[in-house]
Image (cartoon, rainbow, N blue to C red; front, side, top):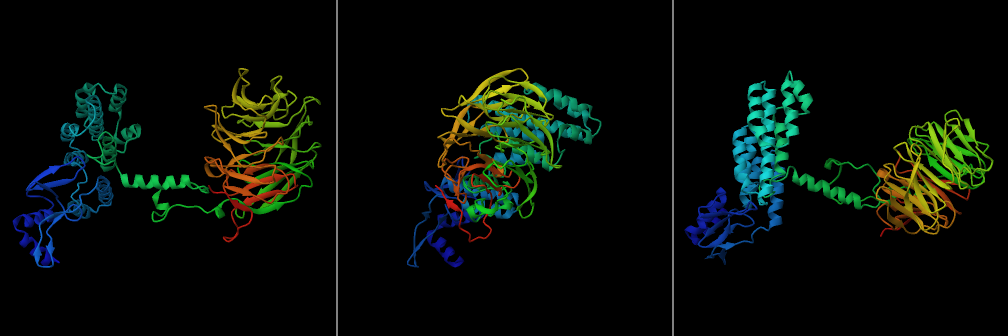
Length: 604
């Protein structure tokens, strides 16, 4: 191969030899032009040729093994190809493979960054602050932005350099030099005077450790100077200096995008690239998703109206028309549920349950004609309070204040109370026909859906109220996401609606569910509450990804209306549903990989 290349160069004459030599040495004896994208090109007899071997290389050609051809230009690298080479070079440089980087840049004819940027980088890393400040003048000419922006960016970069210089002087105990930087260089910039006042306070630090603690700064050295360079780069175009760790950033974004688009992704997001393979696309199987029956709980002897996991995920409470509440213990390993205790005596049946924030207490409410509520101590199984203000009341819904010391309750006959743990009335709001309640995290505001097809916010401290959500049909129930931003409504004859409470807009209407005038309770669930699940009058459980209107799974097995669904807040792969068929179904991933029953794939 070497022999062939040499003979070709001989036959081509001196120009061909010059081109090969210059390519091997990474430089050109002809006129060299520099493009803004960092690619070097040489001009030979008026023709532009590449300056390196490989793509964009000029080589001599032969014909039929003996004829000598003229020099030919290979296809010049495209902008995207140059960008990829620079990204790879930067990554290899970060790994310390300097010789490999030099060879890559030489052979491709690209350069990792502008020579002015390289000089600037070296001066910063070596702490030669005056030289680095002078480099800004060269870099300023490479910023292709309006002059006002260039001036502002240059000023910010100079400030960052001088700040590092000042702090390093202080750490070295050179107080007079630091004071000179503060008075003679930083202050005249007239930039960020508030920060300059803070910096001046560091002159009082007694020793280096005190300085690093107060400034939350790593101290003089490679790490802090690398961080400084990362900040400085943000003001320079990428053609001059690449953003730090750009290839890793792009790969991480690609992995996150694939996860976001994965309909069944239900595990904690790990931002580290070490936790995934880059050789295959990310995909989650629906067999890893909670759409397979793990258990059927048959201890209730009548319709089961409600179910709710505790906040710590260790227990499930179920309420039934059979007048009982059953507390189930969740096995942390197998995720199997075992009956813990039965709470009896709810004469009208149990249609709603609410765990206290610390899971010590559980409040049980009945249907429309029930004027009582029961407050149970779960660890002991004792009834702490049985509350009833009036026999004409209808207490069908309840919500805990975040402090765990108060709760609100109400019903469709116009009662709306705030009470303590002993059932003593603290406040009341007259004439509000409550369908469902939720306490906001601020501890003051209560959201209540009413018979006017709306959700209003009620402040018990200043006795003000305001409209938040207005629907066109009755709101049968609603629940709120953990961050308090989103509300999930079950709307009569319409189905499941997602509202943004902050912007007060309808975000999405989920399709598939059958919703008449039964009270059906839906829920947020899965890791990061990315999913939504709801019961339905067609005996199914529907699951949607929060961003998609079409269901990703329909769970079959119940034989009558599914009244309530609850997703375990700690175990993303565990869910429960309560039905008029008298059973509670516990859903989890497929027990065996070849299991296909119970889950209809509804991918769109």
